[in-house]
Image 1 (spheres, rainbow, N blue to C red):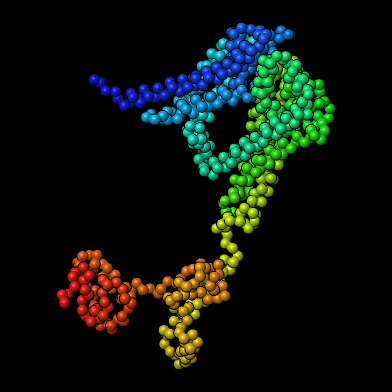
Image 2: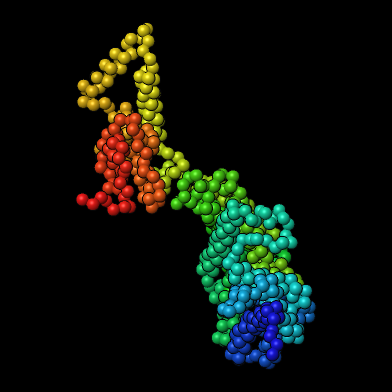
Amino acid sequence: MTQRSPKATAERNRTLDLASALVRGAVAAGLGLGALTVLVMVVWISSPYPDSGPGGVLRAAAGVWLLAHGAGLVRPDTLSGVPAPVSMVPLLLVLGPVWLAHRAARDAAEPEEGRPRPSRAGAFCAVTAGYLLVVAGAAACARGGSLRPDPDTLVFPVALVVAGAAAAGVWTAAGRPFGPLPSWSPLVLQETIARTLFRDRAEAACRSAAAGVTVLLGGGALLVAVALGRNAEAAQDAFLGLAGDWSGRFAVLLLAASLVPNAALWGAAYGLGPGFSLGTGATATPLGLDGTPAVPHFPLLAAVPDQGPGSLLNGAALAVPVAAALAVAWFTARRAAPVEAPRAQAWSTRETVRVTLLAALGCAAGTALLTAVAGGPLGTGALREFGPVWWLAGPAALAWTAGIGVPAALLLRLWRLRTPGWAWRRDVPEADEPSATARAAATATVAAVEAEAGEKAEAEAVIGRRRRWWAPWRGRGGASGAAGDAATGGAVAPAASSVPAPGTALDAAPGALVGAVGPGAGRGDAGFEPYDFLPTDPWHEKDFREARWASLKRGSGGLMADFPADPAGPAAPAGPAGPADFADPADFAAGRPAPDPDRPGPTP
């Protein structure tokens, strides 16, 4: 039998992984299309007056599914006979297809048990290709329906939306890394992304920008809710006038629910200042509604303000971009001056300004992108301009978030870096900046130690110098000083010795300075750290030499000789009792060899 080579097995596994990713993409697209088709079929079945058969319903469902990806539709059956474009995308419908494509790519890029992780590029391409195959089939199916897809929009933005969702899924499977960039990218950009500091600042800017966009959406939704509450009767009349049976009202309710994110973006654009277009000759802003609006009869459009100049209540909508700018500043200041970090780790003023400006730029880009898809033409006449103007909403968001966010971020940074004794920074250690008490105590300690060392050096120099006939007072002065010290304290002061007196270092309270002189060196002073002076140099003393020799001899197994005796030297004084295996200094003084600890002792 022939045995398969490892290379052939690896190629076969790679092919299987790519085929599995392709199937995952197709299944994800099929699930989204099937779910939307079921919903459209339920509405069609429940309608008492259907105007088409099952084939028309399937083609309409395929067109609506393509519209959820950003494709433009064309409605050929109009009263004027001119095909009318339908390019306003219900943003709530976008969430389903995008999430399915994202999940398919994430599952395809994650490693499975018993198999190596597939290539990220291969998983991305396979999932995208499988999804686009279903998109092409749905476009071919919807060509003869009441909502026909525009072929020019199938590449952009449909293919771009699918590729972006798949790329996000592969990035999620990889752990959401911020780099490294592909090898074909510019080297300067690769080096910039590789820096940890740049990645931290970019992450903080992205979080702040996302917070600003979220606050803008929330504020816009609040404006729409307040306006609908004020015009509740007009909204109810529009809802009841579009359909008389419950199935039709259910369809209108589903359409209105899918357009709620669009309405929130319209409210955000209104609060930013540029407002939104209600046809080719009307624009609604906080200053008022100019022109004659071409407003269809729809419940959500009941929130449109009345014609004429705006009031103070309309001007209150400007609080939405102010709140978004404050949110950007708050999220930036949280990273610029963390509560749990010392002051030395806080960002500088320049870094805080840079990150805030980068976050404002990201918020403006996100706002422009969302407002671009929130509106679109609904016809060829007055309704060819309907919704926010993205190239005005984006710069307005940049101006609001940068103009208010930068000063607010700097003020919040200063507030969070205030006196450590206040508020939540009370327990934060200031390791890099010692307190004034500690600095004063350290200065006093250094001065006292230097003075003591100078006096000791001068005394040693005087004692070791030969007596001169012109300086007879040196000996008498030194003797009298020593006698005076002995008479006063009973002994020489401990500060004159390098070895502390018994009980001074052990009995001192924490923070006391052993051997220090001065008012700041007393017991219980919290400004001092306990330390002791080192001994003169006991390493070369005879007792320590004998102890080291005995230890080495014991470790050598008796190969080393005994410690050499010093016949000319005087007998060493008896020291404190040590271990039993050390040699006795008296034996060395008498010329007797030291007993070997590894051998048995003499027989009595």
